[in-house]
Length: 283
Ligand SMILES: NC(=O)c1ccc[n+]([C@@H]2O[C@H](COP(=O)([O-])OP(=O)(O)OC[C@H]3O[C@@H](n4cnc5c(N)ncnc54)[C@H](OP(=O)(O)O)[C@@H]3O)[C@@H](O)[C@H]2O)c1
Image (tube, rainbow, N blue to C red; front, side, top):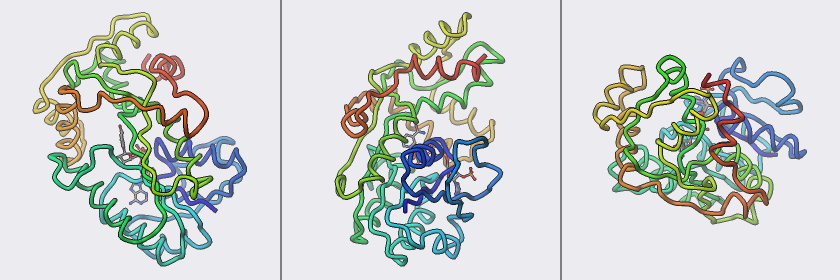
């Protein structure tokens, strides 16, 4: 049995759907059942209602589990609680979603957090696989309302290129690993899309799909941080996001791999395909 945490999120919800479709017994850790996808997407999924901040709920969710697909907003105390519960309950393998540039001395808080969690996971002696995707295409939903209202979006990544990946391909990679964990033990995969793009390319692709101009308004990371805080993003997340966009402007995310294809057997979706599939969200 596979337990997926962060199951109502971008990567987790599709991973749960794929694992179930492929007949792998799957349990989804869900904080609020109202956030579960409707329809038939999760037919046959076992649900464990639980919270990263309540270890008793994690222990209950972990019973009888062989492999955990660990996805969370990457708060170290929360992920470490999940890992410790996995150890208590005899889980054998953890597949962790992490960050490619995670390191203890990173200037970015979120990357230091991932490094701390990775070190804890490795120290437990559990089998593990790390999946560190490039920037998710689904992050664009965060600016969908701005695009609808202003025919443009603000971003502080300059003309930096990135190997943007559709989170559905990250889910497929994670599901393939979780379904055959011993084959992937100790490995690190870096899922990316098929091409390097810039936010100017994103604006151009959106404009073509929407049939009107979409303006990419370049702002500085400091301006972006303030705008995100004003929009209600918690200060630490806004700070990390702005730092990351500044790094992307300098080429930090300009990397591609063929890990999606090599793990899943299918090529990753392009930005054009992502936009075609979700054009209504931006119209
Ligand atoms: N976005 C990117 O470009 C990117 C790139 C590389 C790596 N990553 C990594 O990807 C991970 C995030 O994955 P994602 O984008 O799929 O996540 P997401 O869409 O932000 O979803 C977060 C999930 O965590 C759940 N959650 C939050 N607090 C919880 C709690 N206290 N107890 C139980 N569940 C809780 C949420 O449940 P609710 O639905 O109840 O809120 C949701 O299912 C992070 O580690 C991030 O660093 C992201």
